[in-house]
Length: 413
Image (tube, rainbow, N blue to C red):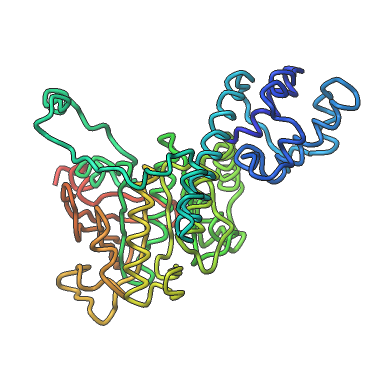
């Protein structure tokens, strides 16, 4: 949820800004350094809130929405349909700001520590000068706090879907903290499977953030709309959709944009690093991050792309760390080495390109191959259940992915 935008919406709709000002969200806070304002208001939202504060300061009233829209048209600043109570929003904003300030203090303390200024770091954290470490404590499984019965009664909830029913049934969806890899030969449909998974996650109510380094924004938008509306990507690219197909695209596009901030496509294209992904994860708070093109990522430690084996391992480890720290799912696709591909055995662990970082760090590795209109997906590696191999018949004119096994069952074969 975009807290700053929701605050703007609530103020304009309710005509009350007092509780916001009482909480300290004023102009001096907004423009100050190290205030945490950037975690609530960024970009156009910050400009709009600043204008609203200035208007209230001059006129002592909240402007009508029509007046506000003269300065900030709907196409540049769109509000959600529902209105969240301002009290809830302020409470959430205060919590976010407090979290930022804590992180900021800790970050400055770490910088001082790394420079050797130990006393200054301890002072910043209000620690006694004699404290230099804390003793670590292991998890004692014999402790009375360990609840075995609770563990036995806990049922795993279905996670974020891959988008292929048989895989999801076997693996039970992707759980927070997982790194998932889809690998395959060039032009085997990895991007299509990645977008299909992103749409499946979005349809289930999850917030999706996608990084694509292989396609420009226009092409990526086209593919999302083709899959969602079930129309031919070839004819859409050429501008030759029928009137009924265009209407389906419009209808799906409208549905996709109903809830703002749930299907997000990063504008970052070249040289994507894990640090860049971290920044956008902090800004948008997604449930799952999709990276279409691991092979084009950059390792900040070596300055090299993941075609280098060391960079490959560094980036893979960093992505797994990101997934665990943020309790999200990270899904990447990558290429295999064509020279090691075996038509008899299909996609195998040894065919992965550039290094084994993803094999070691991932919780699930799926291999994808394509022959004609058939796509085969097999399990290369899994830390948990092993999904069975599935063969999909793809109708590229309607973008329909149908399991061949399901088709045979329907025909009673």
